[in-house]
Length: 418
Image (cartoon, rainbow, N blue to C red; front, side, top):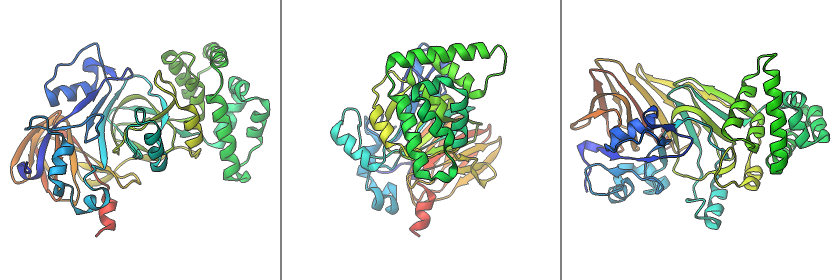
């Protein structure tokens, strides 16, 4: 099959229904899926993820063909990736693009680095379906909440001083060690103690977890009558309602509570703990579905692997606000080769250009309608997903307004290969 529309092809994409997803029409994922495929939405089902890419767990299909996946189409037309991408990754598409609609917390999880992913895939291929690492970035469509990375040493000390239930789990001696630590004690000493504290919490037996959480919830409900609970304490109450007697509720104390406004993004390298809590976002990542879970989930848990793999870096994560590319477009460029994301909001009666670049892109129309022009015109509207070949200049115009996202290979990679 040859390229169509001067390097633009429409894709038919995949949906995932996890119990943490938003229900029916409340879900942006459901709305986009309906617009993209024409399939009816079940108003009682949760629609969690909309996948765009080549991963075998949720492949996209080329729109005007009978069951030809994007992966197969790329293998037949490898030049669409461009020379730099082909030289680095072959015909393996480097990123996976998603939309998330989150109604309740996802698991406390991390994604393995390349070495660990390779060994896990070899040992447990049914659980770890590929051998790739999975750095990722979430860019908020609505207010979006997450737990991400470990709190600072100072905040950890405050938690130990004010949360007797944590001390009950880790013991008085370890609590004293935390309180006596200083930044001057060295990163490795701090890292090892944090690892020990987190591991103690994550591996505590179920009976003790249930007992300690009952005390914690009772105390917070009582104290909430006399004082304003902190954001983290209010989150703990909410998580316990979603996942009663789950050790992840306790572990949440140790992680940063992040609130993104629309248009803000956070990124995560391999081996960093996180849990998305609420809201809707676009998400981009290296082309992998490897997840190691340890709390806030009914799914398989690999607590030992998770506790041993984490970096235990401390401090609040970097929040990306986007770099202005033109009056309508911002670029979000995390420190990974595989991907970047552009956010483009076109008002009524406006036009912008996505210049030719040496790698492929995937465009997603989230709202509105307009025209995308290469060597021919393509009318686009909400729910449309388009693959753009390397070295394709695209003009986007709208009469009514258009909100779209572009995922592509990191522009830094092409700068290095000039």
